[in-house]
Length: 385
Image (cartoon, rainbow, N blue to C red; front, side, top):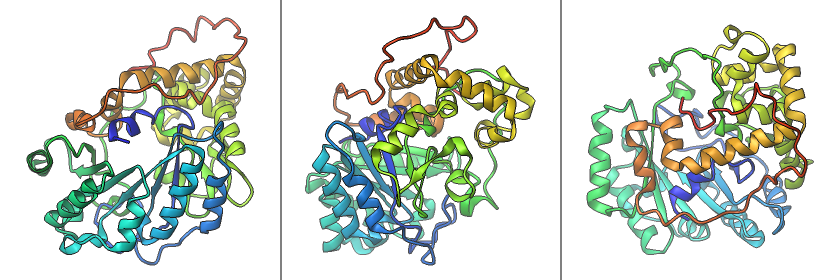
């Protein structure tokens, strides 16, 4: 599975599932969005396995992304989850900070875990390089590639003009050619970087319909809560806003999580048009303090919340959700990175990509559709932020 296919699935509701295997990490990177350290917690492995073992061939995500903290602190769990996912036809990817790579070595237990997944991603940036040398990361990536597992790099810079990004992407191309695609992001003022990173100076919400792909895949947090969004504020804070809470690994299987994710009316509308448009249409866009903050605050605005629930509850909401997912997927993985990552480097996500293959559509078309209200159609759902 190459990186372009992985990223290309991101807008499709329930095409993926993110599992937090641990909040622990032996590295101390200054920009870590989760502020992970070795005092973090591990969710119960049996709850994660139970959720993945509830997949069936007819009802499963396309991809399970294993993350943390540092997921390869639990290599046997990585292998078990990969095997459980594969039994239903789902694939797996793991994202690692490469703590084990010092000296260019690939420990046996970790090598065995990586060999069971369908894609391996390594984090690399100026902050990780203070902990693990770049040459050591490259040596391990070469070993993984030689073992037949597709690899990619997740790079982070201080902005599109960061000279580090120009230098490191150039070296990756020289060393690996097109064999190692790259997903480039910019440091956000969250987690350990909250106290020093520059906050994004984006214009305030203007109320245009802009779909949110980040609310498409369920996320299992370290406490077992299943969430509809990967935003760190949602992952870390409790209580979770009602429209973003999908269940818990102690009591819910994949069928229940998927059903809630696909049928939640407010969540549908967040994915289809974005929170700022809901405020502009049903309240006041001035009440929306930002795309993500406005989404989290929707329950605090009962009129907006109720109107979104009404619109999203029926076939119109289902169709809008489906249309938004299809439009974003059709635009391709680079277009998605331009919106949510570093636009200047977005095309690197497609390096070495195989021609796109048709995938299953996790959201079926409604059998009966009421006429679309004139005020809702057409929508510029492919528009960039």
